[in-house]
Length: 211
Ligand code: ZN
Image: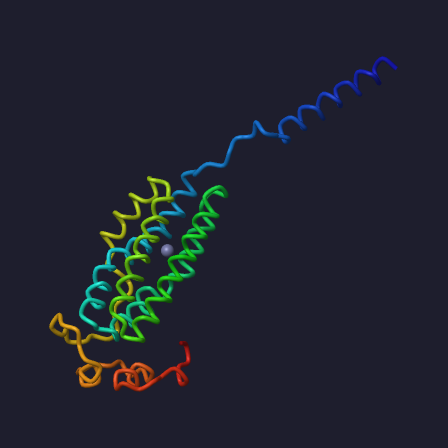
């Protein structure tokens, strides 16, 4: 009997130890950015930093009313932005995720509006949406832990960008072009039907395959 009690005592102690070590409760260590998480984040952030490095190029196209290149840019270099943003958000700590997701939606919304302004050749609206887009992009990157961000900036500066513009258009003088001038603007096309029709001033809305 004595021996039985001793065994039960040891068992209870073992169970108690087990419960304490698993329970955690409010004293549990809050999740932090481990070195593995930072490395993972750096991968995603460096893609966003490479895109960010090219924003002045996008602004330049807007300022020159080069709407075809604006469109090529938002669908080329920025074409993967939605998935890149959602991968970044999912790697942030739970506390940072709601803000990151909200800013991601803002960013994509402004990009969509920029696209529409570009289709309508609306310079003022395009510029407004570009600025909002950049502002929200900066706000999102400011959530990223400093270590990952700095490493990503360094990586983005070293690696050549994987996205190249597929269409090169001779630059026009920095004056607002008339609609008719847009039609006559010589363009070097890559054979994409939708671009061709739009370059010729037509509406490619209904023939697009990936609009
Ligand atoms: Zn916004």
